[in-house]
Length: 380
Image (tube, rainbow, N blue to C red; front, side, top):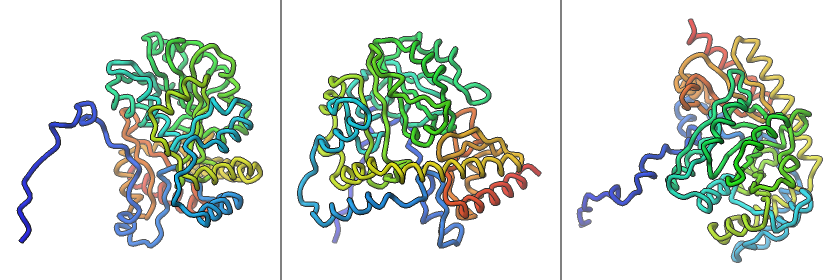
């Protein structure tokens, strides 16, 4: 006979900063949406994943890693990968740090830098982890709004930065809008960041934006500045390695990398991920083809949605920020019934927007048709 388990709770042990945090929203579960829709195939547009196959060189590297076995730990420093990134970026390997995705580096930066009560400045609307990780550390978060046209409000940034933040998160391109700061706008914001603050330039979607002549390379913009900074990039998006979890940071100095090494787990990037990223980094043609195809679809789908009367923010990424004109939660639920998953945006002021990362042309056509039908019915 099984003993009766005592009713217990660990709630009193949880730090109040943690108890008050919102949960990160990864989007709806595919199995649940499949059951709701009655469809065997779900179109998942919620996580900014690429629909295209990885580079053949990546597939070969992962096969070799599997053949070698998984009994031994990976290189904790990722020496081969950090050296390759350093060479391609023109920086010493000692200024490159690896993460279990670039979001892992966001967390490590907060752990290494922030004390309770410190101020962090970021953008609204923005990536939720730019707010959640600082709040875990007991920091305060101030959000800088975009302009009415989703551009960079340099004056608003100037006012927010005058308050003396310790950490500044600036995404370019922006998640969730897909908009970019021009070189002039980036320079203007950077000039206002106090030298006592760490500037974190998040370029998770930078590969998609680089063909745009208006898009500034953050590393080139910050290189040589006499101030602490780090540029974050990832293999999860344009390179198609989201399931392997590997990102990296290029820092202003080796001291910052060493600090992050002290607060990370020693084997935070597994060996297949390191090998895959190294192979992906070397296949320039495959990356260029993925970016080209993605940009063509972004332009095509944007035109179709605008033709249906929807407001779509100009995007230099692989996703679109779309004003549905009605509560985004309701639109997302209706799309679930059509076996489509998007991310309903819930940030104050943007509750009618959804973010949808694009898939293949065939999937995107289904999405456009279903979304326009749902929005048309909702506005009758």
